[in-house]
Length: 185
Image (cartoon, rainbow, N blue to C red; front, top):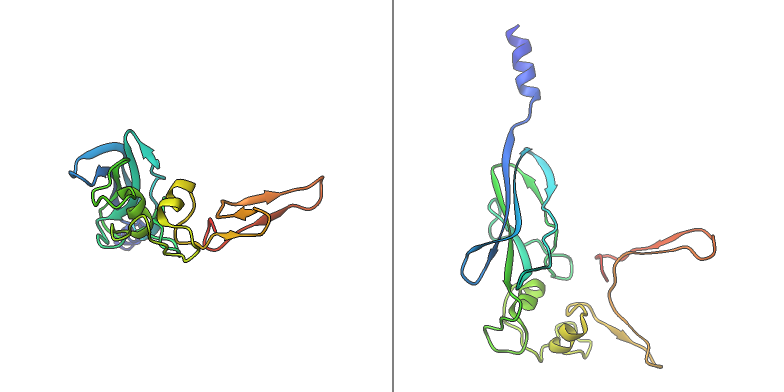
């Protein structure tokens, strides 16, 4: 009977507390963009919720978690991921970071949230061109393009840039799904 009890106890995984919250990085106050408190099985990979890109007068910049506080989840191009994946091994707090939408604390002509989301720091200015495509950072921001992915222009005025997943089915022919690695390029 004791052996059976030990087997049952061993088969049950430990549960850990998984808290998700959001805060204003300017003053460290909690904001209501993300709020969740659950218990999950440990040792399994989970995703945070998708934090809203805009909340009140704030813009999302990145996720961090208490298990790996120095790690910001970024895609292959450097942009912060949302949602963010993590393996829960212990009680963990995942925090969605936000900055005021219009804040430009270094006065460089590019809002802070945009620099933090794409670069993780405020070291760039409006005249930076990190991807070398000839489009300055201020124009990338204004145009809604990815400042780390080289945008291409072709003669005749055609231009293309990053996009999401595209599925195409023309007149009943076989469906084709176009994907890019990393996603969004």
